[in-house]
Image (cartoon, rainbow, N blue to C red; front, top):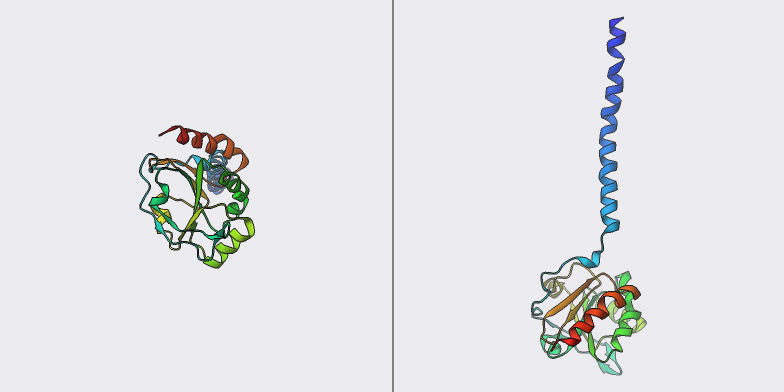
Length: 197
């Protein structure tokens, strides 16, 4: 009789230990999903805010034109004395395609200049992307190996930077420009940059 009584509780204890890893996994997965869903990726801080733009010397995308003229590459001279929006993009980036209408809208604002950095892309694909979706950039530099984008502090594409007249990075938007963040985040930052000398 003592053998039967002693054997009874052991399977219950073993069942609990078998379920423990599953319970821990589900708890961690739930926490991960909660943190992933509640975070705003555009709020990732940039150590470069308030600092001068990095040395940028990128060649043009060959064959790219705007208003019948070749679009130049990107260098630090273009930033002097102008409020500039810098969009880092690639043809293989699906959200980059979604933000094109908002970039077109920004390109019509004569108070600012809009330039692009084409990130780790093939020239043919990049040219087809802009020719098919519209080219909002007055200048576009090709960053074939991604080195310049690293210097800018890019985590991934698309990302958008706002550079003040003083040549310092004033704001960074991680992720695509949308109708919401264009009005609630980017335009207010552009207004602030326009107010600074």
